[in-house]
Amino acid sequence: MAAGFNEAGALFDTVLIANRGEIALRIRRACHELGLKTVAICSEADRQALHEETADTFLCIGPANATKSYLNKDAILLAARLTGAGAIHPGYGFLSENAAFAEATENAGLVFIGPDVKSIATMGDKIAAKRTMIAAGVPCVPGPDTALPDDPETIERIAQEIGYPVIIKAAGGGGGRGMRVVHQPDALREAFALTREEARQAFGSAALYMEKFLERPRHIEIQVLCDTHGNAVWLGHRDCSMQRRHQKVVEEAPAPGIPDEIIQPVGLACVEACRQIGYRGVGTFEFLYEDGRFCFIEMNTRLQVEHPVTEMTSGIDIVQAQIKSAQGKHLELRQEDVTCNGHSFECRINAEDPDTFLPSAGSVTHVSWPEGEGIRVDTHIHEGYRVSPYYDSLIAKLIVHAPTRHDAISRMRGALAEARVEGISTNLPLLRALFEDAAFAKGETDIHYLEQWLTTWRAA
Image (cartoon, rainbow, N blue to C red; front, side, top):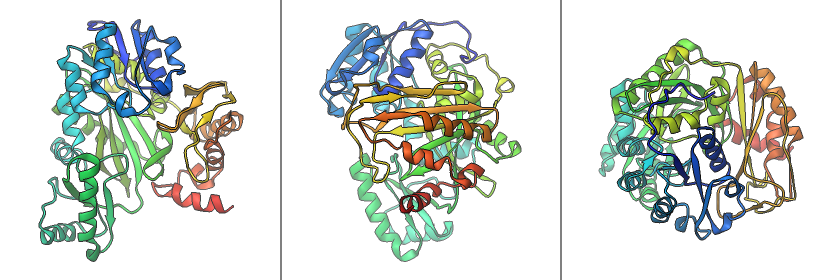
């Protein structure tokens, strides 16, 4: 079901999809269901991509190197101008949270299907984001909402006030980079120097901040949906604690074992924060949850990889909602209309060795996906498809939905057993084993659980 927007407004009729892989296909389908034409772009390495066959217009914009194709702002804007596209959808990754690209898109007279430049810039700076969330009443991780000074003695005093262990983070960081945990005072100065240099090289800014390091938290997300007229709702919550090196492997909705009376005020605070900053489109608030307490860590100002589990439980097409918001349509859905039905899991299927996690490029010789009630597969691969070594290893998302979490686990077990991808290595064996794990089945996990479990699984 599409989100409850009225039908007023239609600022564009053609969308250029500035992305690749499964998300490009997902956006293309949403556009076509809304009666919009699409323009697909690709690099030379992706000429065989499935969405080039289904898009209305297709252009190759550069070589395999992403900096010369999917990250090439000028080439993408030129492709939009040549094809008559009125809007650009960035998907996730690549330029999806790049404020400079959003600004260049709008300066070119095009609609950026995402938040406005100010929101992206504010929430992309972790210090500014934390300050904004505190002002809106969103609970945050203990620690100051200012950048760390250069003075080592002041930094040591701040750490002492927070209480060890602490974590030092890059203000402009993301993707698990630019952060270090410090357990003892004698390791603080070195950690600060190393993180500052890493931040300077990786993100172009040496600004750092410090927070309390939570020992055994879960990673909980709250999905929001906003229009351009001050209306906003939150669409339930997700648990994304199954991570390896800060990269998610399995997600589920709703997050198990969290009482409504604890999470509802947090969801409403997220909605209020969106109203205060004039946020538009879709976004995700990320929290650490420990001992019944939520602590905000960051906001993703884009579509999330794991959006399907929220779609399955809320019945709302999040991609269509994102597009309708960009068209200026009014959100007629009210918070009391949002319900969460059943339980959903998503497994990220990657082209990688399940033991070493090294990427596995090559040709897919056979692929077979499960079918049936409550099973969904978002993928761009097919027999004969060549998995490129140049990009992220995600090749498919296997999603299930069932009335209860127990039923959803059973359904995912069966779906994983049926899934077949041959010619390359995938993490399917790992996922199958994980869904047989007793602690995972009970929901007794945290963000460190998967890496600990992997040690035992490899030894078996």
